[in-house]
Length: 602
Image (cartoon, rainbow, N blue to C red; front, top):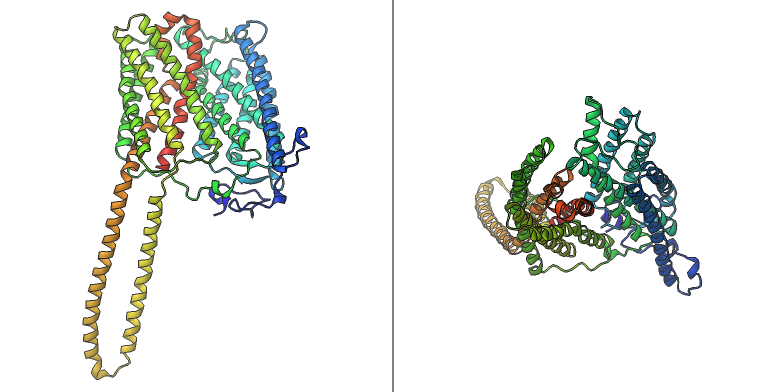
């Protein structure tokens, strides 16, 4: 099987005839070189050391850029005069311009060089990841459009940078999304260090954009929870006194900006993860053993209970979310609204935990082999799942300490305590289930049986016309006999043919019945595990979607119930929520991708 076809991507125009199943000629491989290791006698050892040195220097570049940008953003937040939001925008605009220059060089120069892309990583950039890049990128573009419109209306008290920066952001988002859609699977074999530095610079820029978006998003939480009567901005920004005039178009721009704001944080994190996998794949040589011969497809078959329970959880969650938002918008949320909100979670989280535990037990019982091949995408998924779960787990432990130290016997406090404990357990069990499932090889027996069944059907269908041809040919031979004996011979032949046809049809039916019973027996023996895994995966996908929707679009009871805020103080709890809430949102979204992969490979 050609590697390019297996990976689902078209090869470059210089190497269309190159197959990933057969190693390329040694003359087409560009071994890495680095001036520190130019005296190594072995070419492979020199290339390996050069790869490590290139990764080290490009990583140092990204680290310095991230530290510089973080210093700017922190100075903007804590220093009220020295660094303003406009200064941060200027720095990020310079970084975006450098990233755009590198992406254009890659698209028009690096990727078009002879033998530049000899290999493609079939695991990198799956469809759901690239679809998420396009989806969240489109919402981020709408966000910047609303920001431009909002700043244009308030141009008398807004700076020109508040229009220029979103315009540059739109160009950056479009170019980066195009680049990731077409080249996320590339294992580039030329200009290794230049490509690594460009990828790391783009990753650092996306992380700084995420950091700025997180601080802005927490400012919006602060507006909704404590300063509803005043439009709050960053310290040092001249827009704190701007208020939206009482016009419909201004309200539309303002509401649209707040609505699409959470998608910008998700877009930056997704792009960073895809770019990191590309960085790991620079200079990577993939053998034909890494190319999957069977590519599972997403099909909703054999699942009933999972979609039913998941859809019910989504519908109830949307109703709870709408009631909470209506109460929180018109007035401060009442005690009954908090009880309803936490009760929903207390019912849903145990179901998710039980499903994850059952799925993990099935993984232990099944006989699928572990996938031990090198896979940067899977390694990154494990790191992101483990790291993102720390946000919700950390917030839960802070809530547990605050509740136990105050009044755990109160009804609302006991609900929050139960919610925190269940959330910790659900995150741990779901991570174990997803990580274990990602390391399993996909099922192949069912697909092989299906192909064999189709082959058998084609074989039977091809044999039947042959029988008809033999009978028609025999009839043509008998028509040449004398007319006196023709009628007697026809009667005898008709009787014999009728008897033979009955026997052959009976034997054919028995054979088909035996094959069907054998296949059904084999399917029932193996499929119960697959069915349960699919039901659990589909149910957890829908549950994680609704748990992603609720905090993404504004329901933040951890900030509005007042318990932790009064115990730790506003500033301390504000910093804890600032750390945990965006990570929790990203965890739910990333869990959906891992669960979909388990569903497809089950």
